Amino acid sequence: MYPDRVVSGMRPTGAMHLGHYHGALKNWVKLQAQQPCLFFVADWHALTTHYDDPAIIERATWDMLVDWLAAGVDPSQATLFIQSKVPEHAELHLLLSMATPLTWLERVPTYKDQIDNLAGRDLTTYGFLGYPLLQAADVLIYRASEVPVGEDQVPHIEMMRELARRFNHLYGKEAGFEEKAQAAVRKLGSKRAKLYLELRTDYQQDGKEAALEQARAMLDDAASLSNIDRERLFGYLEGSRKLILALPRATLSSASRLPGLDGRKMSKSYGNAIGLREDRDSVTKKVRTMPTDPARVRRTDAGDPAKCPVFQLHQVYTDDATRDWVQKGCTSAAIGCIECKQPVIDAIIAEQQPMHERAQQYLDDPTLVRAIVADGCDQARKLAQETMRDVREAMGLGYL
Ligand code: TRP
Ligand code: SF4
Image 1 (cartoon, helix red, strand yellow):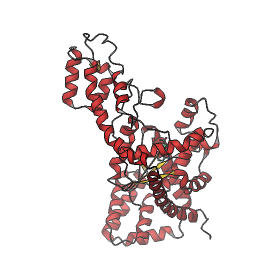
Image 2 (spheres, rainbow, N blue to C red):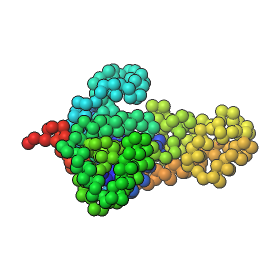
Image 3 (spheres, helix red, strand yellow):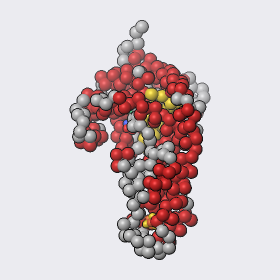
Image 4 (cartoon, helix red, strand yellow):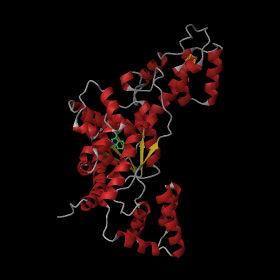
């Protein structure tokens, strides 16, 4: 089968905040050390909703890339690129569109939600309906095994799995596949062949995912198989087709959710965000003026950390001993709110310090970012072109 590969993208929304860091970027930084990763700016996706406002995209793209680098995304470990500079994504989007039922797109929950949420914009467009299909192309073109995303994106990943399955079913036919697969089974040797066929039945008749996993592991270990036979046996496990596109799975980042300054989800549009590279005076001021437990009107009033957004930040930023100190001090009015906020301020500033440092070289010399991205686009294109060769051929376009 295909090697492990992580793919994820973000729409260019401009400068990022600490919510993006805790919700996504921190996880990317962890993943890049474990597996090959491709991270890209989904600039075409930005146009699906902001097609009438193209002027903001370029600036937002570069700002976001600097933020990724500042957060520790490392171009020597991960591939960083811009979607629109790998036009193969558009070709796959087009080819997938041929066999994508409209109802699959209309049923994606984000479709109607977003049309309601962004009521000021006319989103009754072809491009916006195709948003999840373009996203599917982004991922399937790299035969990704894993897509780290937020919860709201899970239906999109489910849909792309369905698309890959449908694609393999429609286009993965190979003349004499059944016979070739059976010949490959025999090459496993009688003991393993028997186990393989049992696991295949378990999966196909009873839907046992564990059987599928076990059979795949066995194939991975079967050193005597040629790659083509191994690929056939992978395909034969799930049906009677070759696997041209791999089925990706969503991984939800386990990272803690960072609440905003008012306790709601951190979001630029709520005005409750702290920028990833915000300067220390501004961070200090924002936290100092954060709302606290509304019952603590005077310094002498006792408070309840459970009702205070500052305490939510303590959950992310401080240790048990500090939280203990808050708990006792707040409920007995032994500490004041400004005092309570200080360890949070210190921790945020300490977290941002290396980000400021990493960003500086890119701010001093923006050509560095351009070079990183040019390099990433080349690498991504090579991978995308390999898949597209197979896709074109499977769809009858393999001539010339
Ligand atoms: N739709 C994603 C979001 O809004 C962004 C995105 C575009 C994406 N293409 C992707 C995420 C491919 C993961 C994989 O966050
Ligand atoms: Fe909130 Fe801390 Fe003030 Fe208690 S002492 S109300 S937890 S800021």
